[in-house]
Image 1 (cartoon, one colour):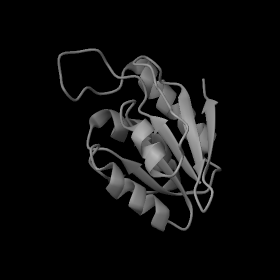
Image 2: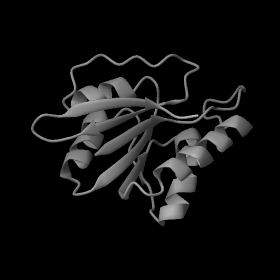
Image 3: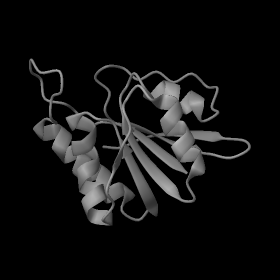
Length: 137
């Protein structure tokens, strides 16, 4: 299983690489509590602060060092996910998640609105991949 989430809410500012907002940090903590017992064995983020900060609470709780894969390298990330023998968490971006889901074999179109930070996706990989779309508070 691959759990895919968009980074938590980012701070508003003039930077190209904003950190999480206060609400975003709270969302990252909520995500950590939700996934703590999910048998996550690998965590992947992009090179941006907001994905790393979203993954940090669960990475610390599970004592896993996240693997950074550049946001534009969707095929590379999909390949790494297919090679895993366990559950993974991917923290990505609203504009890259749909392509990653498609690269994992799901043909259902996925759209993530700009201000939507509360959806997450679970992809059951394998011969017949399946997609589950959920929300967290």
